[in-house]
Image (tube, rainbow, N blue to C red; front, side, top):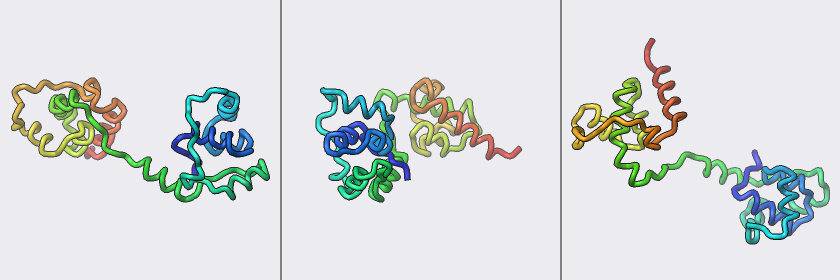
Length: 178
């Protein structure tokens, strides 16, 4: 399990202030460089008020900390709760699309349909963050605003990234029979 934690600097500050762990142990646990931890310890004024207690948040136990304080070769490891939390938080979540961009979705869909017909409806939906009925309506030219649509790149409209578009195109080309 990787020792990835949500607020590494806040956790490091808490560990510096409340334990006698070495900078190396704190850096290893928080996923930081030793010099970053040392800089946090040396700074008199911190941008972070308090710290993020790994004890209160069930990431570590006092027994883990005491064992690591006794032997500076012991590495801190987060418990199972931390691993489950990291797995859950790393799942892809729906992204918010601002109102100014939402009105541009049909233009982006039209561009994708025109310039990359190899993309499936599902891929276009994912790239443009829209629904299948909207994609089908634009493909079939039955969309309510079809006359007003202008094909515009979803990358330029900031609806998807160039990497996402490129990956979708490559995936579609792999599925296409040769």
